[in-house]
Length: 205
Image 1 (cartoon, one colour):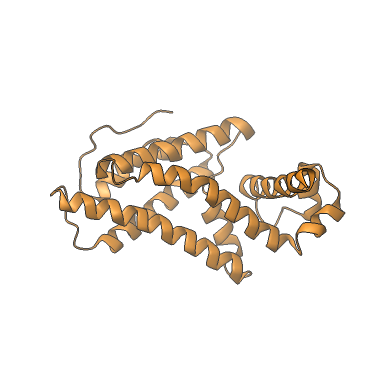
Image 2: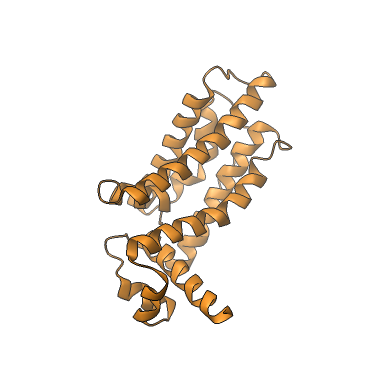
């Protein structure tokens, strides 16, 4: 049983990494099996198709990320500090990936979503759900900041949406230019959208 689970986990991790490093379309079942070190028959033992594996990889990636996000956006953390911690987390994640493979990968959700949005409704809907969860983290921090008199919280959902668009655009630009400079100023940009002056902006890895 342990070996069976290990094989499935390796397929999920391989799919996540390859889709993030390259693209969904260029990642074949053969590539996934080669990266995972398993036979093709093992792939179809666990998954009906590449789409089913991609969905499992999304779930696994989100489950690993949500623990950190819960810590970052904890109500015990001052609301503005949550955004700075989030920006630091994003930068840390991007630096680690760049050091591992040698180039900027950007956001796996946005890269995959923009590629499959007109081709695979299941993947598109799940990506939308995960992005909506990010919005809820932002909106919660915005409301808490407003309660403390730090900003106008009359439109938390709209402001959260603007923050999400900015974050995704920053990561996409970083991927296109293969340069993490925009990500190093992510906190500054997020707080600018909130019409705030950063208390301790993170600009280095």
